[in-house]
Length: 198
Image (tube, rainbow, N blue to C red):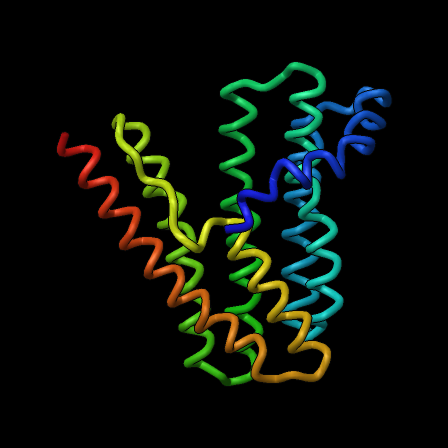
């Protein structure tokens, strides 16, 4: 869903990308720094219960995922290594964000929600893997309502609302992600099966 807004986001961050290139900062450096910052922020703020603060900081830091791509395109550095690094570190950042939610619920004795958060984490990793694996075999494995951008926005909105006094918001976000994630996995499996059987 939100993947279609990537071009709009790219235009928004282009001035920042130009500035960083003028300062001779490499796109890969932005990718690494953004990932480390997201991981540290998530694993510090969320388990402590600083949910709205964590959501806002992670949301801003997640712009680095758009900035590095814009930098690569402006500097004509788009290549397979950059794409590989970006995708790999996205999985690390996702693990930290959703893993911190698992810890948040586990520390508060809410084991059912901790398990659901873990299931959503695994499903998200599977969604990304299905596309990559299908395409590596010459098939098609994309699509579905729970692409990475959608998952991140939903969990951050849940964290933000929960932290601002709506205790049902984060559990609700997990339920939505579980449903959309399962739907996306089924859809990608079906598309991969059809394309690889041809």
